Amino acid sequence: MTSIAQAVESFDSLDPATGAVVGTHPVHGEADVDAAVARARAAAGWWDSLGFGGRAERLRRFKGVLARRMTELCEVVAAETGKPTGDAQLEVVLAIEHIEWAARNARTVLGRRRRSPGLLLANQAATVEYRPLGVVGVIGPWNYPVFTPLGSISYALAAGNAVVFKPSEYTPGVGRWLTDAFAEAVPEHPVFDLVTGFGATGAALTRADVDKIAFTGSAGTGKKIMAAAAERLTPVIIEAGGKDPLLVDSDADLDAAADAAVWGAFSNSGQTCVGVERVYVHDAVYDDFVERLVRRARAVEAGTDYGPMTMPAQLDVVRGHIADALARGGRALVGGADAVGDRYVAPTVLVDVPEDSAAVREETFGPTVTVTRVADMDEAVDRANDSAYGLGSTVFSKRRGPELARRLRTGQTAINAPLSFAGIASLPFGGVGDSGFGRIHGPEGLREFARPKAVARQRFPMPLALTSFARTPKTEALVGKLISTLHGRRR
Ligand code: NAD
Image 1: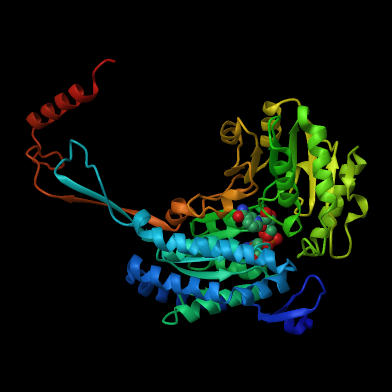
Image 2: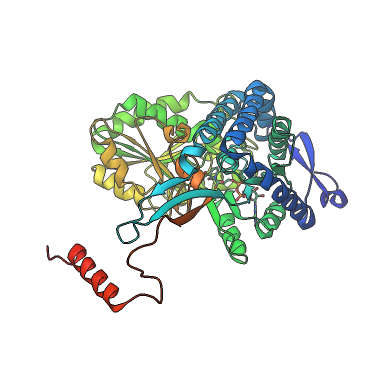
């Protein structure tokens, strides 16, 4: 950290593996944030005027910069988060797919469409189109500092908005890199701008003259943002945390399920909003599944397969959840009480953990997973749904995948593969309950950043004037009769 006197104006971003300083960034205050939003508002008109085609062309230029300089971006991500560059590449690759999808589909999803005017107003031509909101404030987390914020930013830009982005204080360098890359592709106006700092900078952005806040982070911060945004009736989208379950049915491919559970729970050190935190396994295959899971978990190494905990404070949360689970009768088949080090956490598989303990109910956000035996898949669904969160879920079942998926109270479910929904650009992504609301990605993600504009155009006057003081009792009687003939029939 810089000295206290300087800290009010700038802050350091650190390599979580070593503590080394990797960059210094300004702490933007309210006046800076307001100025950035004002600049973005001036740029928004130009961006809107480009139309879908002009914006798609420029978004593709941006995409090209990301693709060509991917290695450089991955190094910045790895330095600030500690994740292996291969994992950084995965999130950049997926983000590029989303930019392309948003650019290609914005016109189809948001462009003007005719609607039926109905019989009574058959003289009208009815249309709806989705207009940009103006300026969208995006507040991001650190765990996927490219993929997650771009999931909002790409769709907001494709819909015709300007964006002011406040990245996490743990990954400001990634935010800087992204806005610089965009400015290289679109040098004309500051359509996608950056403000950096801590929570107070995010709070200033929430209070600023923005037309929507797209927030991704913890449920606690989401609640504060929603309360602050209420002051100006600024709409918000909240992408918050999760406690995602993975269900293993009696007919599941157990190797594939164990592989998915291990990757879903431990990759990115478990710091994934849709990471697997709980596993519910059918009694008939429980022992077999656990054996395969344990074998795989023992082969995963902290420091090689995944990096350190990006946020040091999270180490205490993970340690607390493991200790509580063990104190309440749980057993660690892999890892356990000693798994949490100074920076890294070793993979931990917990069984026999009571359902009301922190390790089952609260977001751990570390490389740990609980495994619970269930009598049947009805019990698995009930236990999976007994959570304040509802972000993602996974089902391994040969015969009942779609049925079980529908019954899970989560925004998205992957069947027979881990986290597959996040990479499919046409699918909406978001949560229910404490996981938030609103959707990014897909057509729903484009509409999230636009307002429907309805227009009714009269093509010719109606013989029966209804909305005029010239309306006669005869017209009223005729309309009454028409409606009772059309809608009043007994069925
Ligand atoms: P966080 O809530 O601590 O911070 C997120 C962002 O909010 C940061 O940029 C922070 O500076 C800012 N912020 C903090 N206080 C603020 C305030 N009062 N007003 C405005 N902004 C404020 O979350 P985090 O630790 O950075 O991220 C981890 C969390 O994010 C986990 O819960 C994870 O599950 C969740 N997450 C969710 C998704 C999703 O798509 N649903 C994706 C990734 C991460």
